[in-house]
Amino acid sequence: MLNPALKVREISFAALDFESAGERPDEAGVPIQIGIAAMERLEPQSDAFFRSYLNPGRPVTWAARKVHGIGDDDLQGAPSLLSLWPEIKGRLSGRCIVAHGAGTEKRFLRAFPANGFGPWIDTLTLSRKILPGRSSYALTDLSGELGVASAAAALLPGFRWHEALSDALASLLLLRQLVHLAGLADHSVEILVS
Image 1 (cartoon, rainbow, N blue to C red):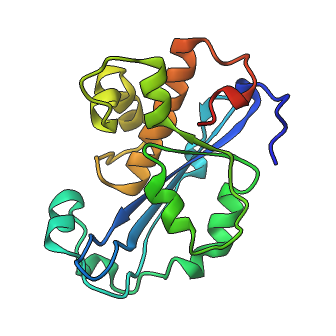
Image 2: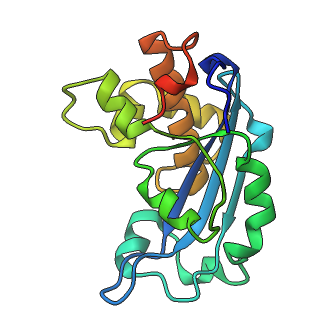
């Protein structure tokens, strides 16, 4: 559990994003790519970036391919989500977990019951609190408006939307920007948790 006495500027964060094989009438989406980006003391750690394709055990839907551009050929020989447990655990344990619209990420992590990850910070919820009245709270729109997309592209060559590591990094940088805009760096981390 995270020490509530720690200030936001003292926290280790890990942003998480999954891309999905798409929904089918008989089945919920399954993950096909994972991306994790880390930040220490509000500074991104580019040497700690992680991404991997995942074997979903079924074809990617046409609609999902249109969004993220990942096809079945990309997933040949990819590991399963469960086989990456040691890697994921090492990168997420002891950190606040960040995601934009965290529901999907939480759902996919249910593959690891009682994982103990968290607390969770949802940048979608936090954006709505800190920046009320926006017409859009999409990660792409907020990132463009707040200069996050250009910062992410500078840190991650080949940055592109709907790629798991790119979206994770954008969420992390959005969190940092929100913290600065609202003057939250010296507050308890509990102020960020939804």
